[in-house]
Length: 116
Ligand SMILES: [Zn+2]
Image (cartoon, rainbow, N blue to C red; front, side, top):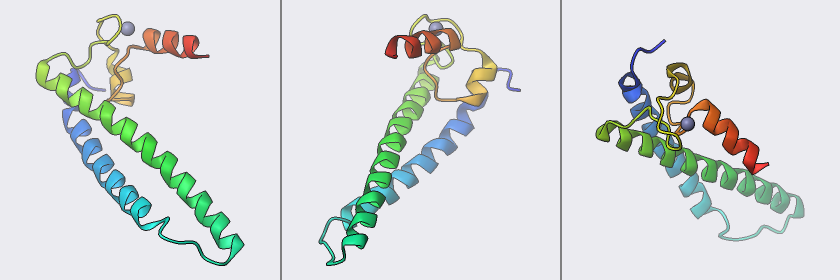
């Protein structure tokens, strides 16, 4: 259990490194793919499926990377650990579980509810 939001800094840095690496690899895969089609129908289908998988992984990695970078920027500004929506301190247990979350639990739940 962490005692202050700042303790998540090294975790966020590690996450950022991991995500940057992942995004790079996926970007390279995307660039290599789509250069041509084989004559085999099955291969094309498999390839299309792989590409779709890679693309959704790429998009979710990019999204997560943005949240991690936002969190790191907030650490610099001293606003990390405060909810983007209501400004209250985010529960430390929640920060430990999801270090890049910009919202406290009740705001996240409210947002999820409204998105439905
Ligand atoms: Zn909130």
